[in-house]
Image (tube, rainbow, N blue to C red; front, top):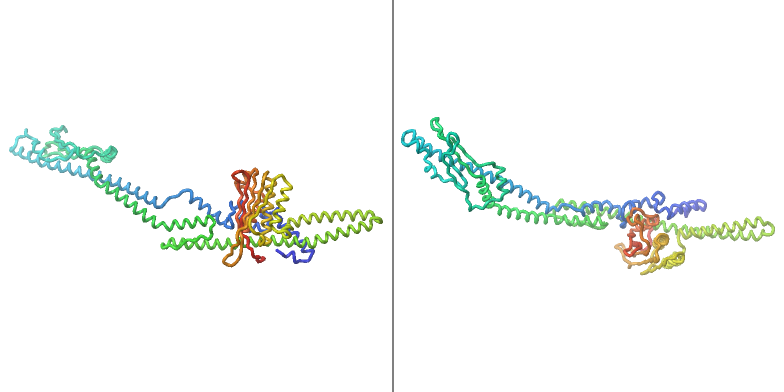
Length: 536
């Protein structure tokens, strides 16, 4: 990058002009012209959505998962408990259906038993009648039939040849048994339509003596089934409740490490690349922890390297601008001054003998003066001379006072802390950020008051012994505020993009927001190493 400074004068001038064009701030928003915009392309707010130190490109990918996770999701413990309850309810419904079916089958067997007993009793009477031991008009001997006990809700009937009821006996329902709910009775009727009924023809030697019919009321069947269910219903509910509690406790204990995994993912999505997961006893969770820690370590190392390279790049850019400004001041400015003096001398010498040459000499003096003014503007653009002559604080005071004289707004500069040990490159970064912020406030804010506050934190030392200081800068105004496009982050001017890129390249934080009482507040913070960096 410093090649042009060590070339012979003709080539060095070409290289320096090309360098000045490449590093012109007007191209900070153009990634095709800015030489370090390619490197910081992924850190640009328009593509990453938010500049948060140097982790923006990583956080942007993880934030999508983080937002999906924060919206809504299934809780595994309650999901398992809910499914257990659902399966228990299905089993309960199936068990109820089987119980009703079993009670109905038992009713059929009870009817069969009664029909067989009555058949045997009447068959004995028929045999006695056919052998003349009994009279036919006494058939059937129903009193002997009544000695057989019938169940609740059961009826026994003897039908004649044309299905007429000749004799019948019924037993009512047991009112001591609690009545089942109507829905249960309706369901049992739907499953087992009509009465439970058993019929058998009474035939002796080919002659029909009638039909024996035994029936059982379906309401009685439903009542019996409900009684059977209520006996085991409490036990089933207690068993299901105990099972749910046991599953919840066991799963909650097993998933406690998963909460730590989610917490680690959340920290990583928030930009904490130093986040690590502890060791787990479960092999699957330990594998997740190993992969997570390897990924976080790799991201941290890569991001640190990129951040360090970006800081070196912008520092080298500032140093090279400073060296170019010094060379232009010491060489070109001196040559222009000599040229102006020589032209003035020529004009005075030939004024009497060659008036036309004297006029041309005056034009040459005017051209040299204009070139000198343009050179001073270029030098101020490359490196404000007051930074090296007066220092950072005095330069910012002069810059603020200059804006106060040019406009109707009141510009105030305040500082806290010591900045004497801030390197020249870092001072250049601070000056350019404040300069761009004041330009934006003067052009767009329409504010009555603009305040610049520069704060320097205490000196801290890293493990490697490198000393650094945290620089915090805020620029506030009480103007009209941000336009809707800028406040939503969908669009930013070239100046804001340049400031944001510079801060992100320095590994700092950049924020621009509306003030609650009106106006805009710009906040910038980054760490400044106090030792001289190695040139790249």
